[in-house]
Image 1: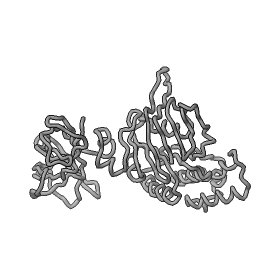
Image 2: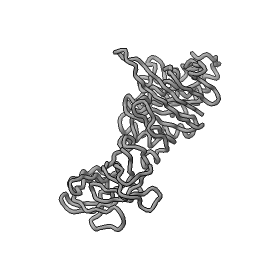
Image 3: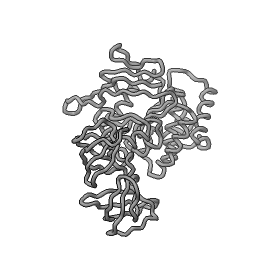
Image 4: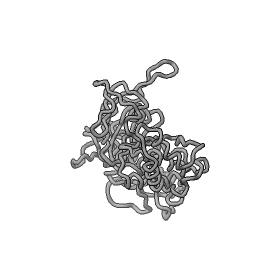
Length: 365
């Protein structure tokens, strides 16, 4: 298990100013789980990963792997990177171009502090290359590999030392879109089969949702929210998380009254009065922002039953193959909806919108 507590990491920029890259970062990763640090560039996710690896020295905090304390500011403990027993895959892969696939995978075993026999090296390399499906390419020059194969080789080199923790820093960002999608499945399969505890860094929310057991969304050096992919997507705690993880409609609204308990409220929005779910306790008169995902805005040509139903007009639509993105005008407000291609309502025609109250999340601005 990995435990990170109160981590603060700073660095000095070219103007000699102290930049707080990570501020009070705290999280735990259970044994065998994949945990993702997700956020925009410069939010502190890579700095946090490098602090775990020992490539950055935090100012304050504590990092523990299993029962071993590898960094503690209060106890003046800093275990060097090569003594932490961790594996890391960088964005660039860092493949040795003058070596074969086999030699690249064997390299960490040959230069590490522990001495391995030729037989042990061969057994480990053979096993790890089979795991990443590169056995038949063992004697191929590393430069002759495709992008996806180089990515798998970088993984093999990290896994050959049988690390207790695997750190992945945007390992798919250099791949094209289709290959990146295939490699998500490969990574998920490998992580599940090997059961290795993994910390994954990415700015790609689709990648995070597809791969993770849990996600920490970071912004300006701090963790905004930690939860399962479904919790992060369906129950964002603030506007930043809702906006960063997926696309959404934001509606400025004012709370009128509670609606029957269980966290539901009647709010006045640009669409009219609607029923919404508040994650925080709200009072009449409170200003909120209601987040509604496009796929939760259901469209129909006849008026449906239930709460949160409005009539609008199709303003624009874009055909995207498996779905159609609609822009629907309700008064002066435009609402985005994602619908099945079977809905063929022409631009300019009237249409009805319906949103389930639990899909309308009222957030404090």
